[in-house]
Image (cartoon, rainbow, N blue to C red; front, side, top):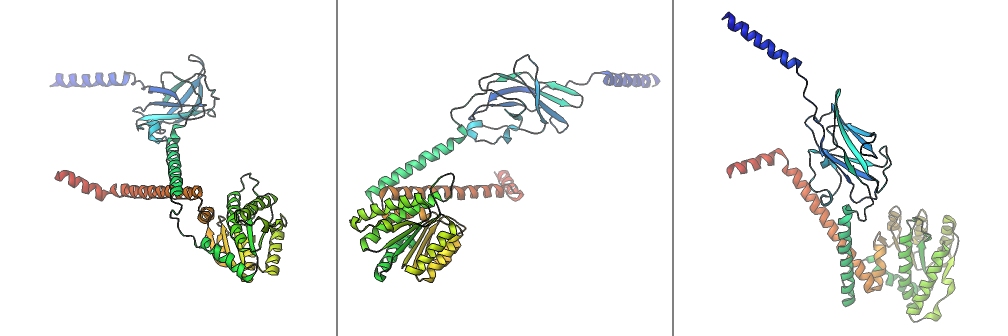
Length: 418
């Protein structure tokens, strides 16, 4: 028994000595490093992809090195914890990236990452895993950045554009076959005939304002509304010319006044009364906001027009104009896409075109097949988008609901039953 005990103690001592004196296991280097040009960009960037290692944690870090020569000096450009930056975190559609894996790291090298990447030039990359005092480096991978002709991440936008364009073209074709295609009733536009007829019966003028836009471009938010206002003016002028009513269009922008002069002249010509057109129908007042407002208010109080049209983009002058018009007893029709002025028009005017109703007015009044078809195509496109939003919301809600413990247990019971 004594010999056996000594032999066991000696064996245990030798085993511990062997374990303590043996070298530690070598740190595994990052595997399967791949460098590639980033798809669908304007150049100057490269993507890196490599397999996740068994020691990935906050205690370990990855360091990215780059060199312009395969055996040259590598430059340190970035580092991050080893348990971050996985491929499944890439923001991008599946048709560009395919199946994004959770066990693969990804790093995007850009021109501002400590190096200026030149398109058409080769670059060499190396990934180093560092944990404590140990480090292990991957094999060298090379890639060449270049400009891509097409951004495949925007392929869905291209397909939607083609589908929407086809819808609009088909709607225009249908509108040419059937000009009486259904459009949602807009009460404010139905009242145009009533307003002009009332002015004719009372022997008073029709006042038409095109808003505060000047059509000078440079990102002016009022441009679209001003264009829509000039188009509606053409339709109103046709009715005014047919009834022989006086029309007054004061302006605060010379460019808009020149356009409106042509619109009104063409309307009188289309109505068969070119001799009734007067150049003084459109007249310039001033470019100053409140000086223009005061002048128009004075015109309302002096000449007391029977119908006032406020179309286009408006600022703080909207309430001053509309309240004065309401005090004179005129029928008032307003239309604007300036959402901060809509409450004032809705309160003081008889009818108000809200937002895109202003853009639909020209198609609604003229029944021009191209305009009606375009409007119809837009409505169909909006219906598809709204349907997609509702369906997406339902699926996301259903997915969150099915992920609850109750439904998981229910599905497990179902599987056990099968």
